[in-house]
Length: 305
Ligand code: SAM
Image (cartoon, protein in one colour):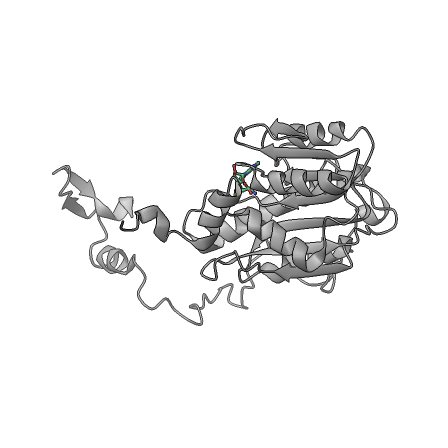
């Protein structure tokens, strides 16, 4: 019998079907664990952007194999079929309400691990896709600061674009060990990779805050933030006090004859779009009437310029 088109699919797709994973992504998390041992000692985890649920399946299997008192909270915009031991929330991780719902499930306890495989619908415009991906990651990071225990691990999908170093620096403020990992099951043709952030250690005095403007885009009262949570950048006015004030008007510097010499710009425009109008206005001081080809009405070109 000849091969069906499905047989020709990627090997991880076929393996996922054979082994019962909901998506081939399961292998990405499994391979990250092979390298970083992220499930060691983990009993409480959050899976952000979880649908259709292969990472939650991996978490459910791995955590329940080794530990008791397991808690897994999975969140996605999409609904997903139930999984043993997994609490599901359908919501947007950039919304404060979703973040609060996740936090509530921990009843003041902390998670050992937060994973996020979130991906926006790609537009094909790389800069925009990378930007939105980074915003999603920052929303995930904000939730993480509320639930992750000191020393915990955060794993998240990133797009390795031009400006990714900024994101690495932001992550390094909270995690001393940040590694970028590309599992074998992630296609080389994709700019996707995963940051593995270990040993959560926020700066002393850091208070997680829901006033982050990335969430919900609501305005917040920055003055309530104190200490390391708010850096006030020094503001310095410069220039001598006797220099001209840009917001004042000054009399023209007239000469002894009471005249002011108006100077042309040092660099005149090469071909300004209004050049023709100026030369016409100079030639014909009165109104310049032309017929508008769209309306066939006569219009005063000079006044409409
Ligand atoms: N890790 C999943 C698995 O193994 O089955 C696959 C995740 S899939 C690549 C990306 C998911 O991100 C989609 O299900 C999408 O709905 C979700 N997503 C994108 N933006 C989101 C947001 N703002 N809030 C919650 N989920 C989001």
